[in-house]
Image 1 (cartoon, rainbow, N blue to C red):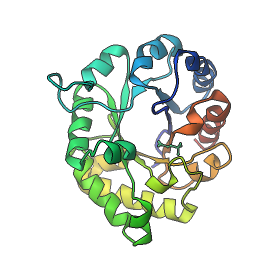
Image 2 (image 1 turned 60 degrees about the vertical axis):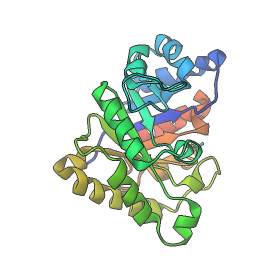
Image 3 (image 1 turned 30 degrees about the vertical axis):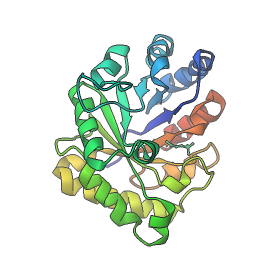
Image 4 (image 1 turned 30 degrees about the horizontal axis):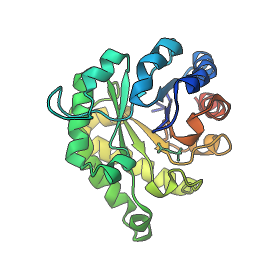
Length: 248
Ligand code: PGA
């Protein structure tokens, strides 16, 4: 089953108000294609991005699992929703590494996001040493088992496979390795979610650029892309959106 593609940009801790000018070109491109496109800027830019981006969905890069409370520096899914966000990335490898987020925490965040009316993009992916040890599939399957909300379905849940060693490095897995991993993720989602697993989009992320987007997005069960560095400018992001739209 071909799922409607999603190309989401993750600005990470980059950008300022001036950078929101990039949204003009991105929103125009998004409005002219028949796929889903979204941008996840830093928290402080969400509300101004929503005001500027028209129909382009804007998302957060993390949320807390609790609705409110004594969690200094954190943000709840409902707060993101009120700021105008419609989606949120959870369990990015940078947060799993830097903030020591566990699978159980990631699942709780995804559940909180969905309960607040957001689409949750749950990230998984192996490190280079795990791949070298032949454990990539097992690691990702374990992350899915621990991180995927059992009630998840395609309308509210997206998975992003992002090999840690491919993020920000300019390196990407072979098409065969992407195909093997995405097929395995599809099987695992079906094990966890039953029939609903067939409707959950699986994005590839890690050094997606204009010159490799078409090849990566043509792989079976690659239902879109999560793009970091190349999402910061319309000049790099729009060609990726257009490559995804051309594949459909
Ligand atoms: P990258 O980041 O495209 O800069 O490799 C991807 C991500 O971390 O989502």
